[in-house]
Amino acid sequence: MIKKNIGKQKHIALVAHDNRKTDLINWVKNNSNLLGRHFLCGTGTTSRLITEETLLPVKIYKSGPLGGDQQIGAAIVDGKVDFMIFFWDPLTSQPHDPDVKALLRIAVLYDIPVAMNQSTADFLLRSSIMEEEYDRNIFDYSIIRR
Image 1 (tube, helix red, strand yellow):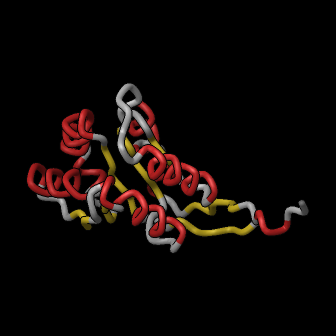
Image 2: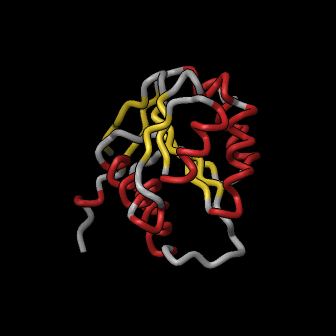
């Protein structure tokens, strides 16, 4: 096991499919006082809309279908994202579904908290752990013998 520390200020990625952007923006508005304590980033249009609607600073990656999902995945690997809120649309096929699956796989591999709906996002954001440092455990898959 490899231990990696998540600091008191979390680096949170905000991602939403087209049919869920309004839901995520409204959720961010309702939680801007808590989210404002952390570092935010997200994919293209979602980040721009959140910044416009809430005035919270959000680092903007490319749009999901243009590589933004992969950029966030790389940021997770590099330790620059340690928490993700991803309001996805489970009923609509996305042209970049393989990228979404890869992003979720990376999130699991690197043991970061992920919320994929509002209830989970509410529970995670209001957890007492949000205000503390946290050591996540990354399993070292390189030690597995084939």
